[in-house]
Length: 193
Image 1: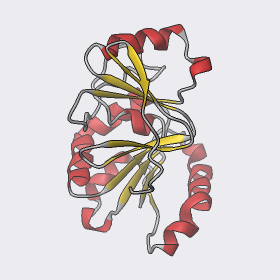
Image 2: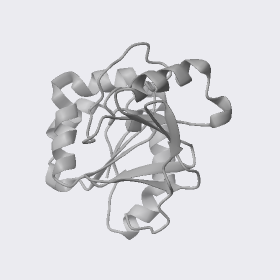
Image 3: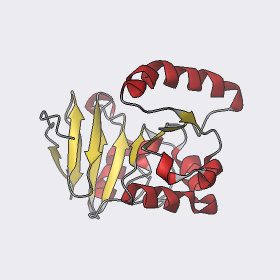
């Protein structure tokens, strides 16, 4: 498993690496998986994809992440790996980039294309909490919902996409905004991911 804490100052790399290893190493070792931390995204160009089962991309500044991934076409490398069966996990910015546009990130000030892995136009928003959804983000969701659907993910939930279906896994249902109508994405309790 490759861990990419891409958007941290170098002074925080060691603490991020320690956090990730403490949180996941034991479970991953139980299933025969080792962790390799990659601090420079461009190092992915040198990685043998046959040795990669998954990629965990951390959060941070979404615009900086997508710009860094586009240098040397690392974004397209990740799409090839995804299409070849490598599991991708993104937290916060690392999740938002997989949608059609990263305008759902609060720090992004204009429409900026994401990697766009979904067959339908889908936008991913993270840290969704109905009580704290401000007017700016409500307007952004409304604008984007005219061209596709926004899936706003609460902290306690993640999405699983298998190339066909999007499933919500966790404790709270994500909000789906499409053509300004709101619904929720039902939680998948089957553990069939």
